[in-house]
Image (cartoon, rainbow, N blue to C red; front, side):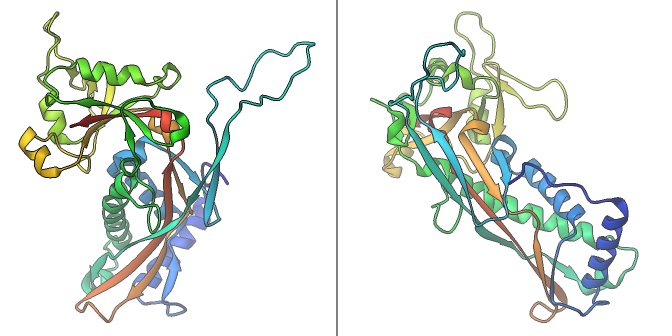
Length: 324
């Protein structure tokens, strides 16, 4: 298991790319499938991080196995301390569990026209990698929120949200209930207060664009200042109450009382927490690509696959606002 892949040399990378281009254009008939070159796989991974809000926030680990086991310490007492001459006794109150993150296969079906493949000047590898990244980002980000954990990653919002008598052993996510449609920012402050202080460094908000639009003009009733601050520099996130906001349109919208009544279930439009500590993505390095020149004429279809898993590994690092 490693957190990053070793970079291939330029010479090896160029050779891999040339073989891949020959495969795409049908100049090499050794196989109908082949792995993507490491340079293209890395480009796709970087693009996925840009396109998938949760991937950009979560911890990503690579494994060559079909699952990744993560040890989770549910004990609130520290697991470290100062060494002394007294006997160090084992903590009988420690509560340690294992979370197994199983990897599931996600696929993408990019298509390229035969004329582009025949054009020696066309950078067909860019077309392929852009298409794979955009298609997979859409599916994986939705799964990181709502996935069943059986055929896809286990989503954050598939867990129960507990708004009273919360315990870590429940393996649920702690939240607060809002009954007034979030007319005041005080509930946002209460939500922040649920998060243990050790997770505040690296904490962020997660919400849809719909919810963000309703919070942009919310003001502090005492000072009159807006609690939302637009980013000053390009590429940096806006902030809400001093913490960055990640926009994810797969998150639920802010519903009215009438819409909530029709939904017949609580809605979670806002999450706040340290997603790097709370949610872990596991994946196998690289992509496999299968070429199909027959079933989508006049286009050439490709079938790209990758194995990805994900699950909440620290429920106490993520908090939820619940509309009821």
